[in-house]
Amino acid sequence: MIDCRVLLQGDILTLETGWIRRQYRWNNGRLISLRIEDVVRGHGWGLAGEAPDLAWIGDGAGTTGLLQVTEQAATSTTPGHVRAEVLTSRGDLEIKRLFRLYPNCPAIACDIYLRGTVPATRAPGLVALALGPGAAMERLALPGVHWRARAVEFFDVTDHNNTLVREEQLLLYRAEHAFSGNLLFLDEVLEDRGLFILKESPAAHAHLAYPGCDFVVKIGEVSAVGLGVGPGDVSPGAWTRAYGVVTGVTGSGELGRLEAVRAYQEQIRSHAPGRDEMVLMNTWGDRGQ
Image (cartoon, rainbow, N blue to C red):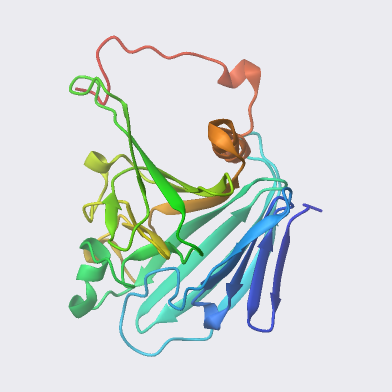
């Protein structure tokens, strides 16, 4: 049995890997983050959000959410893990959040799927930048005011770019600030501990339906935005996978941050030295140009 825990008790959903524990208000499947804990280091953060973490797109009445938990056996490329599927709908649009829990991993991943019809009156919520509650794919109402945010943005197309990694950081303030990037570190300055949010999507220039940024931060709220789908990408006949998001806890200092991200990366693909330890060189540039 895989040593991860998924428990829905009353209106509280708990997800735990043995390292990180997340608690949500169930809210009929419209999950609202309540708490994130670093079980290994013995501390956590109470979250004061009142809006659902994920954008709610579509009109009409919502249905009662459904929770399905399955164990995924290990394959030649993927370690065994637990999947917690949260399914709900809003009008003619179904939304599925598929949480992936890996044993003793400091992060929990969430894949997002959409199926149905997006009403034209609400379509901009999918593709345009809106800093309110209609845009987020992850939302954390962080406690306190002493937080530093650092966004890491990656680039490819080396025929045109020579700087492949760029960072930007600032101390959270009352005014909103938008970042572009795939990775956001959130450091609690006075305690030397923190969180990270990894957006599993292409770089900004290749991002589909790009809203203009990837993260929006201010004191009391941090959001990851940009699902990567437009209204025309969603249909009633099949699930459309949007971009995903991974949220985790980090230790102190630069090493603690990098170790946390690396620990998650090592879980999503099994490493076999004879198969995976190789270097690929393309003398004609990248992306077939």
